Amino acid sequence: MTKYEHIQVQSILNRLNDKLDGFSSVYSLNPYRGCEHACQYCYVLSDKYIPYKKKEEFFYKIQLKANASFLLQEALSKIPIDCLIIVGTSCDPYQPAEKEYKNTRSILEVLYDFKNPVHIITKSDLILRDIDLLEKISSKTFLAVSFSISMNDALSSFFEPRATKPSKRFKALSILSDHNIRCGVFISPILPYIVDDKIVKNIISTASISGAKYISVDELRLRDTNKTRFLDFIKTIYPKLVNRYEVMFSKNSSPPEIFSKNIVDYAEKMAKELNLETSFSENFHMVKKQMELF
Ligand code: SF4
Image 1 (cartoon, helix red, strand yellow):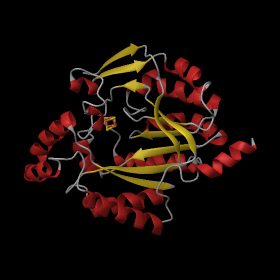
Image 2: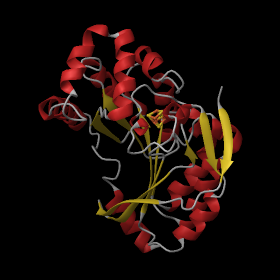
Image 3: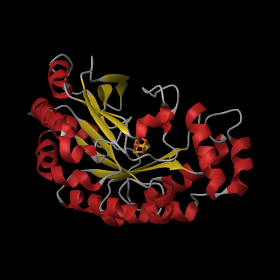
């Protein structure tokens, strides 16, 4: 059973990069610690990131950062207006807890006041609740909403049993897009020998039909705890793939370059044919110019 806790944190923004894609800096922001979606491949479950001593607690002990909005106001007053804030890098900001606690919404209200560019990543259609606020942010600054979709509904019921089904994520994307909110699809992670070209093709064409402006592809990463957990799971549903995965991930945390390159090349070629961009921030320079005019 999921437990919820309110905690106070020392800081809320985590600096990721400087001078990237026209942003003077890039920061990540996670309204919660822990994620109820419990995806089998969750990369956050690696020793490098996991904030819990008992690793599996990450999926059912959800900590709400109660002072997040306050800290964010302080932090944003000290950084330039063209610093990008990515919401949801180590948890889903619209996981079930958000329905009741609205911590993500409070954070977005602060971001609206400060006009910093925003990028939200989610696997949930709960984001539709905040259309009013997203429209307001989008009218003032750069906003991109990326839906993480890398499989069909059938596979998702195994690998992402507690997240919104991909077909409903596409529906949510379509609704946001109809409200002129820039949306796209992160096809990540590509599960070797499970997510094939046909599935990727379907995702890209559905993204295009649904109004996505961009797609982006990323590989599966497996290291320490998340590798053990994922391979244990693969044993139960794809026992014949276990050896191939063990070889593939024996020395590295990602598949051989040629494997990833083939999928990325395929996806980018298809994106070009459908007039989709291949980065969430490809149009930022345009928005930045408009921001400067204001
Ligand atoms: S939604 Fe993201 S953070 Fe949450 S369990 Fe899935 S992969 Fe991990």
